[in-house]
Image (cartoon, rainbow, N blue to C red; front, side, top):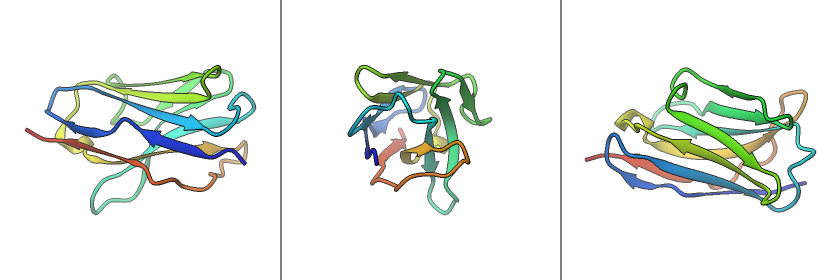
Length: 117
């Protein structure tokens, strides 16, 4: 099973940008979809964005217009470009595989994103 590792988090000021990377241990070409999730303090984990193996993308309301998910199959990596960050975006961000029956693989450590002045 492909293992995913998140990176790219950090501390950023409101209005700033970050690009998160999700690097797989093997090919992602045949993975049905990959999603970026986040869990803010005191809240449940939520799906922020997803991209399937045809390149179709979906976003939740909080990410629309500000976040862009993309994939580079040659690098086995899925990215999440986040712009116009707000303090409410502070969370641990995770990536995970999504199967055709909407099941996830094992969860990784995630990467912390903190938006604060």
